[in-house]
Each structure stands twice: as C-alpha cells, then as structure tokens.
Image (cartoon, rainbow, N blue to C red; front, side, top):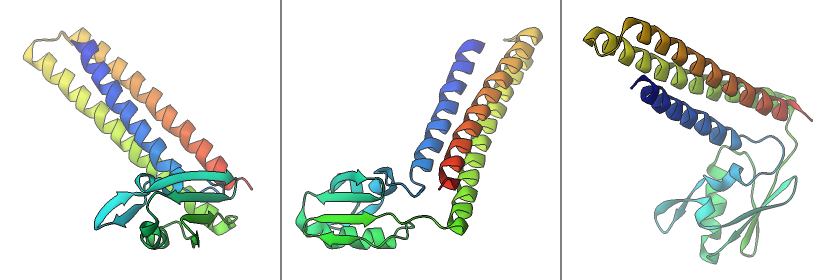
Length: 185
C-alpha cells in the first residue's frame, strides 16, 4: 500500500514538472520557437481558439515565426490576438501568412524574464511540497488508524522526502537552463 501511494505522488509531481516545462516554453528567449504563439487564443468565429488550431506554426530561421493560416478570413483575428498578447511583437501580414520577427532582448527585459522564470519555478516547488505534505498526512493517518506500523510510516516518510528532493532538484535544473538561455546573448 505505501508503495502505491508513493507512486501516485510521483506521478503528480511529474505532472507539476511537465507543467513548468510547458510554461517555460512560452517565455521568449530571443530565439523563435513555435510554443511562443501556439497557446495564444484567437477569437475565431466567436470562439477563443489556440493559435495552433487555426494554422501551421513554423520557424524558418532563429529570429522568425511564420503562421500559415488555413482560413484566410482569420488573418485579422490572429493579428489582433498577437498584438494583445504579452509577446510585445507586432505581426506582419503577408497574404495568408502572419510573420513575427523576434527582436533581440534588452538587458532589462532579460532580467524581467528571469524573474518570471523564477516565479514559475517557485510555483512548481510549492506544488511538489504540497504533494509531499498530503502524502505525509496520509501515512500519518494510516499509522494512527493502525493500518501501518510506526516503522513503515517512518520509512515511507523518508521515501517521500527523497522523491521530493529529487523533483525539487529537477525543477532547479530546468530553471537554471532556462535562465542561462535567457541571459545568453
């Protein structure tokens, strides 16, 4: 039973790390990446639709994103959605394509983005720690109910702490990589 609980906790922690990775993909680093625009919501016939569902997103070079729309009538909606987003980039409409030229990041903007990365990382750490707390409470309750021996409870708590440390370390590594990517020229 304790092994099953720990496995469930690990899966939830893995989801927290995956969520962090997804959040970090959306942070601009000065290099073009489809994830920068794929989740921007476009008002497509009155329905907020992710950009990835209205066209093909490609990066022909390191500083440009091209969105090839499947429906030419959505060009204005896509342009408006990009302008309203937090990217800070003006789109260029070219027929049924929308081009985004990714400018070089300023030193000030790099520091701002680094702070955002740290904020996301801290949210992920808090999520992992909350999962640890919930699992610890579950094992303490099981010990109190008599369905788990005191030794087993302590072994389980040690295992939970090791798993938590492992996931916190993963989060720190992912964060350090993203910060390095942002701060590099």
